[in-house]
Length: 369
Image (tube, rainbow, N blue to C red; front, side):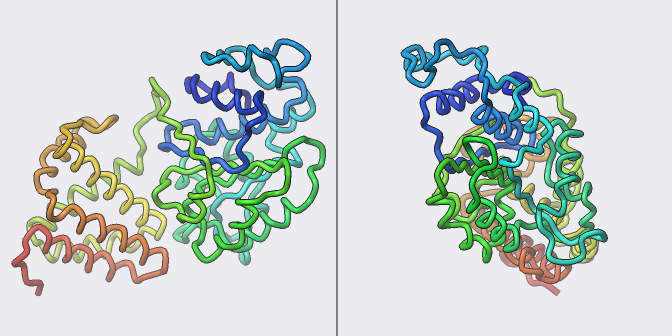
């Protein structure tokens, strides 16, 4: 993946290129942005550029001390990896021996015990190449067939990170470890990688990729340089089907909660309990995002970017019910629910309890049956 193959993001590309040419590559970086952003593609292109042996567009024999690279208005147009040297060829195939990936996994029919990222590497390469390096975590889970299980970055993979990076690089200057969807890192496994993330071996680069940086374990987040990747401008990508399903379910759920329709809430809890824990968490994260849109519309008068049609109408109608005296309570309830789902709480009971607590936020004098 070359920078030139990624649309837009001109300023970010220039900043990333300049860190390499100035020899100021931070050893742990977090690329974060919405699903529609090119964060993973940029991470791979960045790693490929770092290890390219025939970088293009650089004048002079000593590019790292070239005065032209020190000017304030740095122009990176034309500077890129070559795409043809042995390192680039292997990067293009995602098969470079010094490029390592970690991503959330779970047991499947093929991998029945102690799942690790390396067990799914062929599926991972095919998944990225088929989707042009830009697809969401739910699509990944479907590609490997984890069904209703939770995908996580587990302790086995954390141990693998430490072991892999303890070896010398095979052929490139930098060893690169890309951790995709780092917010899925299992909290009990995180301590295994804290030391190596803070003090890695020389010429080791961690690139963490995330869609929900607020969900990242704080001790991990504090050790990274954050790079925000915006949604691709002028993107023609179709609306996310999961978000559409989440919107329909959330609207129906909130209407049932506001109307205190207990039988409808029992039915809702029973139905969502059958959807699998990853989809339950995805739905709750969507709910939190919608609450944020309501607050933004209420207090800042801002129309959420990319929201339109029935969803925008619902947010306009719903936002007056999200008030200063209940916004924090809503936020706490949804975050607590995500926490308990991750720890295998009984989903039907959890969602019914959550529904009744939301009813009480709308109607403080409500007494449940």
